Amino acid sequence: MIKVYLDWNVISQMKNGNHTELQNILQNNSKLLIPYSTSHIGDIFSSFNETEEQKELIRLDLDYLSKLTKNHCLSNNGKNVFLDYTSPDELFQQRIETKDIFKNISFDGLREIFNQDESTKKKEKRISIL
Image (tube, rainbow, N blue to C red; front, top):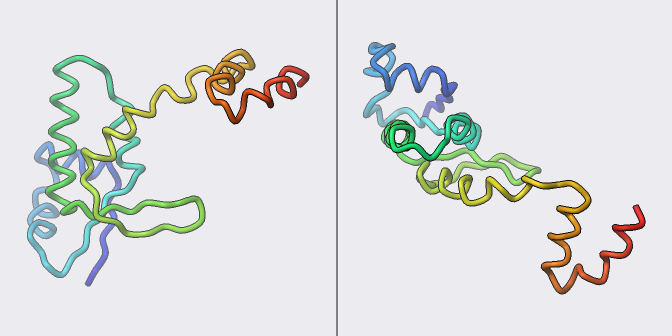
């Protein structure tokens, strides 16, 4: 099996009707494995906002990515890259859910995070000394 990794710009252009010859070669070719990656999800997420128009554009991007890659996803765990089977929509929803985790990483913000957890409340004094 031939593995083909495409940059998000190429995928987006194909979705918008460009590169039709390449698209014809890639579609429904059982000899090709075309994965997407968490980087593609990051590229899509960079345009995220709460407007209905933008949500629809993102939905179309995720649907196209799912169709093209058959939900084959390259992920990493910090040490290794591995091939997984996950829908782009699922990863995108995870990205939305975690988008505000590091919104406030000031000392006050970190203190608030630590004070919300019983196991880290005791360590709060050490943090305030820093």
